[in-house]
Length: 129
Image 1: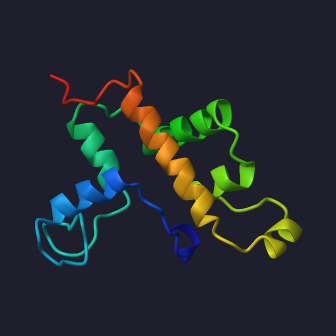
Image 2: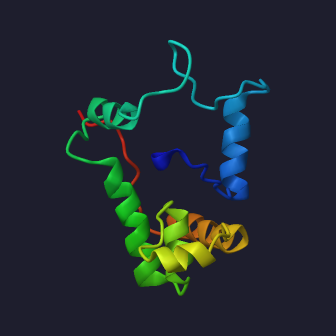
């Protein structure tokens, strides 16, 4: 994480089911282990996108898509949407008083995001070529 701070992510039941299936019964610490051992680098997602033929796409674009949907299509407060993206309050005073993680509200937001993706005309990414 940026700024070396933990970021807890409330996952939906379908996301948890996918992760459990990926673990395949193993109790390893990492869901996506680096074949060479340890964690992937911060550029791993960019490398995957490039190999799939989407080198022009950025990981930040995925975050932007979520942020735009949350702003345009939901009534969640700004603080909940920003916390889901691990953003900090711009005002130091507000940040000093708002120390919670908003996990229950973020869980509802993530559930609504998952439902939106499942019910919409989102085009799945496939390898180009």
